[in-house]
Image (cartoon, rainbow, N blue to C red):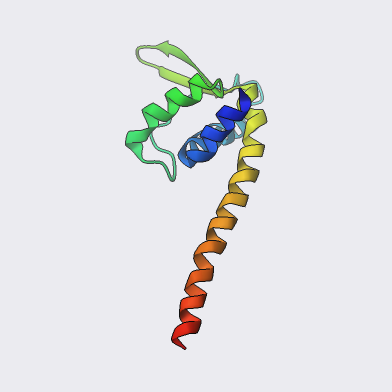
Length: 120
C-alpha cells in the first residue's frame, strides 16, 4: 500500500509541503522543549500551499496514515503529529521530488535555449 500512497504524494506536491511543514515544526518544538509530546496545533497557512486546499490535504494525510490528529477541546482546537510512516516516507518523497523537479527544469530550459539559438 505504501507505493500507492507515495505515488499519490508525488502527484500532489502540496501534500508533501504540508507533511514536511508539520515534521519541521515537530523538530523545532522538540529542540525548544525536549519534554514536548510533539503535537502541533493545526496550521492554517503553509508556504506554497493554497489555503483552501489545506482541509482536504489534512484529510488525505490522515487517510494515508502519514498524519494523526487529536482534538484537545473546543477552545484549544485540533493538533497534528506526523506518524512513523510519515517520518519514514518523507525523505524518500523529498528525494524523488527533487529528481522530478530537476527533470522538469531541464525540460523547460532546453526548449528556451534552442529557441534562442534559432533566433541568433
